[in-house]
Length: 114
Image (cartoon, rainbow, N blue to C red; front, side, top):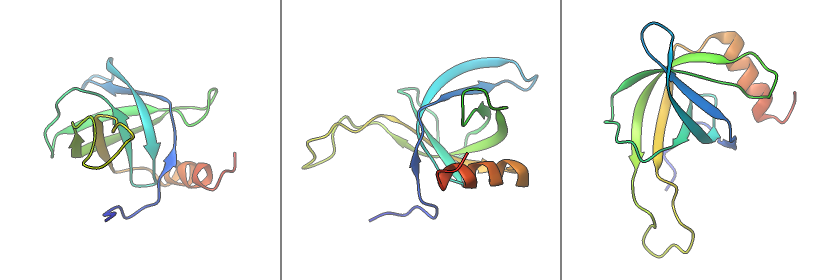
């Protein structure tokens, strides 16, 4: 059963967590994206409800999207029951306060437009 509100699209890009001063301090790779959030590949344990500042680019030469996020779920299993494909460990983040401009950029990306 899929509890997601928004459809997802594959996006493998660098996602950077920033500290409260805007300095980069952790780097991850994303797996997928929606207008409501992003999934990042990591074995780092982050509790549900944890708030983070992140930035990422949809395209190579694009200006980064900067937004706060909240950890919604953590995937830690290597394989699900009855699954042949490995499950990628990671964290699902919900965007908090995404600007209208960045929402539209993601929406355009989701439609396959540039």
